[in-house]
Image (cartoon, rainbow, N blue to C red; front, side, top):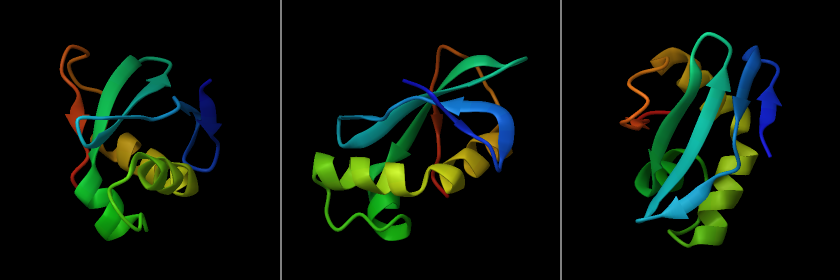
Length: 91
């Protein structure tokens, strides 16, 4: 399910995160962009988003608790080549 991030951009929607290869992976959709893939490194989630450790449950919780902040970073980075994920090294 994709959830809108109203405060940042009423048309931006973020997918549910998937924790794979030690990172948080998700997609964003916005009219005019289409879908774009993003990666949020686990280290960023621990250092800046409040994850207590690198476990999948903590990384998902950090993502859910910081959706607006992540959406702001997505808008700032914009859409790129759909074949290559955008790495959000700062949030």
